[in-house]
Image (cartoon, rainbow, N blue to C red; front, side, top):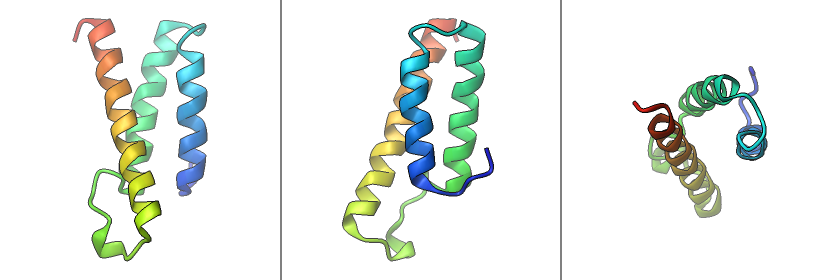
Length: 81
């Protein structure tokens, strides 16, 4: 929960995608909030040009952020919000 590594967040996202098929809906909803907060903590929602990262890492950050956003929107629609 306190990790600041993008790879850890990627692994958690993959776990979350698999868990939503068989886990309790309340658990999935809370996990969604956790994913969004961790992504914000890592700064994935900000453009990484000023961080001087490689193009590959920048794209991976961007793809991970939009994957989390898409999953969050799906859960919100499922909840009727």
